[in-house]
Amino acid sequence: MAERVLLIEDDQELGAQIVERLRRAGYEPTWWNRGRRVAPDELAGLALVILDLMLPDTYGMDILKHLRATSDVPVLVLSARNDTTDKVRALQLGADDYMTKPFWPEELIERVRARLRRPTLQRGDVIDLGPLRIDVATREVHVDDKPVELTRVEFDFLTALARRPGKAITRAWLVENVLDPSRDGTERTLDVHVSRLRKKLGGNLVETVWGIGYRLAVGREP
Image (cartoon, rainbow, N blue to C red; front, side, top):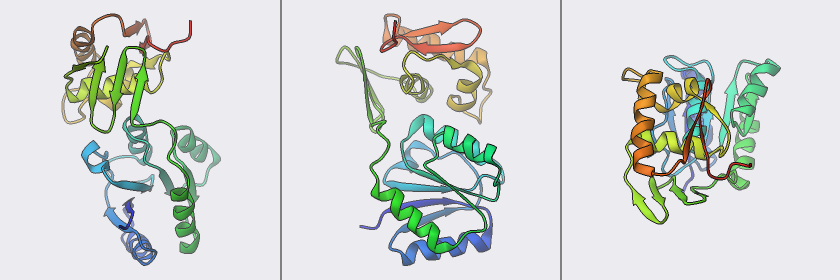
């Protein structure tokens, strides 16, 4: 079965060329010509994302940040921005590779092949931290082996913290990357979700870091 590649590229001519090249190389491309976040159900079965940065509607770096909060799918950034600052920023956010435009199509295809030959980053679909177990693929949470039903926001918030156990995550980042962008997302709204999540989880798994945000207590170094 052909591996699925999501291309997010607004340039019509370039996008069509890349899609054709990917098909000829044996991949199954899906092409978006506008920027938007990738929903969890759209990630199922994806082998790779090729991501432009300067997109209509949503900046590519924001798409990358959201992807890394919820998924390990490899991301190859393809951008006309050739500043070192942009490259470093993208890699820090979790991009697996960065190519600048213009480029040779043959090189792009070989980079796709090279990326797909490597194992996925060892972040895993299952996160075990003390009494907490999160299955990112099935979106199931257990505490002390007991299932806990969470809303979409509660699950994404908990997973974001669990990716960095013991580290403080700012409220601003959580508001931007966890709350529903189509609704009124404020830090106060975030606090309400956290209050409900704490009641469901029990104990003191989610800690407040005053003046900064929140962190997950389990797995934190003393």
